[in-house]
Length: 215
Image (cartoon, rainbow, N blue to C red):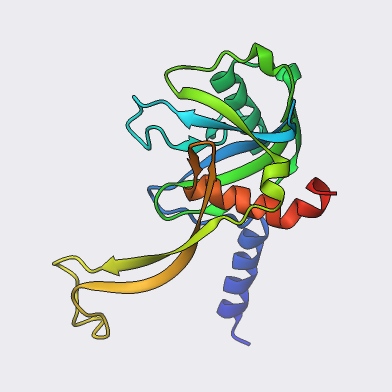
């Protein structure tokens, strides 16, 4: 075997051994973490949701879980989720318990979302941040046990720009090109509509852990 090839592969192997593979992010993607908060209510165990403030530029009024962007000071994404709960709901760290993480979601539109499940206590002490949160509400697990969300198939497509080098990729044609599709889940409860990423996280959580939630 050629000695140059042996040297090349040996050096490359050493370099690769020092690296830990990670997700290759698009330039516009960032990490965020949310918490699926389980709470005790008069109606039994429930999940707490937030309605985003109407003054926000991005998705005003939409229903979401407490959460936000990862910051360098956060040791991990679980810390991000707990910190955001404190900032948005005004609860102390002692009221928040992280139970574990769910599968994370990679989106092409923005964040890579790392969901966690946890519990909240002292709900009577919630003083939510009005700059981010319009109000909070809870949905009983008993309501969700047999609930069938409305499913809608969303299509995703791409379109080449005007300066696209069609001569280098002749199979690409001008105009929109359908790429893939995915499901959107809609949950309705007392006038609130839960959908989008929040709906996907909720649906996945209920599907995977229903045996523990609905005994």
